Image (cartoon, rainbow, N blue to C red; front, side, top):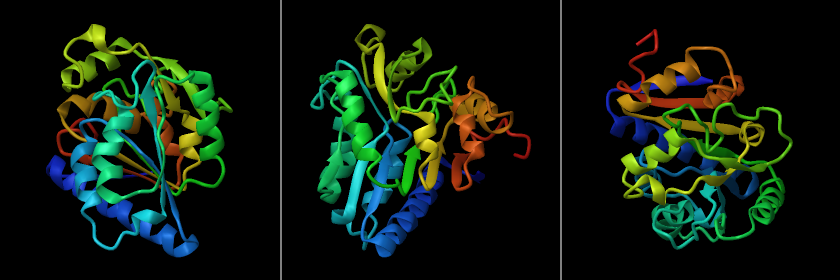
Length: 245
């Protein structure tokens, strides 16, 4: 794992997008397609905007998955992650093959369907962020680092649910679902490359716990320390508690 620190959130997002573009193009050149897992959330908006504006990416050759979804929200709900992915990535690129999780379906059936699809071939790059409590995707602390499942159903921590309200996705806490489907930590680590983007002072403590301390289930994103091609893109605010900044 390597860290890259930039002066602003915009510069971090742009650098992360450039890294992703290189990986996607390389995968298409190497084997005719790229398999990508996308993340959602406020931090991803600038990153995805820069990504979809990239010239000469053959998006028709990209097969897309996403990290997680609320249980109880359908794909057309404005706060659903499937809606986020469609609006900011699929509709702007013409990606033809997108495996979007349905929060209204049977959670167990959705986990099985998504697992079969994602395990049909290696993932080339996974985009992630970090929750304010250090979660990776919706793997809340203490996270399961040993599960053999590709997708899990999880209970969301209250801090995570509050974060969704603070970011404006929901107007009040009672609207935020309490459960979700998430890609598991072991499955994320199977990706050939992992791109983690974290910006803003509110992520500084989670960044410190995840990347300046030991690998621990209590800081789920710390699992990225064990990946040989994980790159973490930070702005100065998110990185301010790291010792070398």
